[in-house]
Amino acid sequence: MSSATATGPLLSVQGVTRSFGALVALDDLSFDIERGEIFGVAGPNGAGKSTLLNVCTGTLKPNSGKIFFNDERIDGWSPHRLCHKALARTFQIPQIFSSLSVDENVAVGTLFGLGKKSIEGRTKREFRDEILAECGLDPRRDMMASTVDLLTRKMTMLAASLATKPELVFMDEPLAGFTTEEIDQMVALILHLRKRLDITFMIIEHKVRALTHMSDRIMILDHGQRICLDAPLNVMRDPRVVDIYLGSESVA
Ligand SMILES: Nc1ncnc2c1ncn2[C@@H]1O[C@H](COP(=O)(O)OP(=O)(O)OP(=O)(O)O)[C@@H](O)[C@H]1O
Ligand SMILES: [Mg+2]
Image (cartoon, rainbow, N blue to C red; front, side):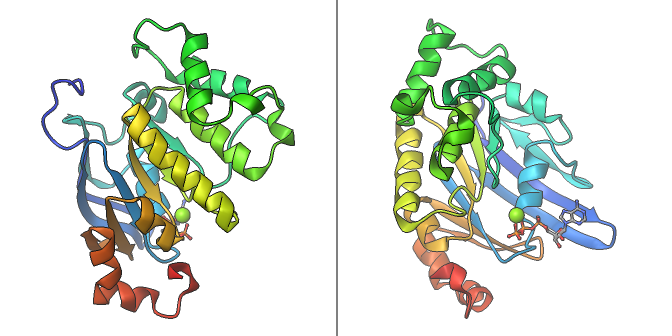
């Protein structure tokens, strides 16, 4: 079903469980992501956040449960097939081609991920130019990825994911390793892209304060279970969340 005809939430995770041997990393987890929202995910180390992202983007298969994207069941699909369905992801450690320029990295996204999606009459060059401009990467487009700073590398990885023309972008710790100033820049960019390109984001982040600034809703995971899912201010006031984070510098 296409997004034009789908009526349910953009993504619906229903009773998903994923174990590694005896360890239950995701424990009968359910939640929905609505179109256009920034959906934050936080929780302590080992809570199951990356496993959730891997299960939603096809890197891991769930042991049980169902995942729907635009009302179509997608659990167990390959990452490539999901990418062609308009699901994209970025990684905590930037995964880009260091021997290519910023622009060429974005071109790789289009080449492998655009599939049959429409770019509405634009040439691929024009489409890439728009993405580079929206990401503020235009002045750095010809720089080799090996020579740019961490912020530019992460922005390039995000731009390459946008070049696949996604409806939903999953980001694993986009703010890791950043200074306060860089955090502000990346948060501003994500908010800008949501507005300009009509993209929905699921963002996993340990920097909870920054996550509360950009998210419409936040889900807290612990031991693979949903502890809380609400508007950021309610989440931060929830005694169960305070309990989990008490004494942790992550929440500061
Ligand atoms: N491939 C794997 N094989 C075995 N155990 C795994 C594997 N991947 C994750 N785990 C375990 O599953 C649990 C959840 O891991 P996961 O990486 O999803 O946590 P996380 O919330 O992303 O943690 P962090 O905040 O440290 O990134 C952990 O106990 C982890 O050790
Ligand atoms: Mg993780």
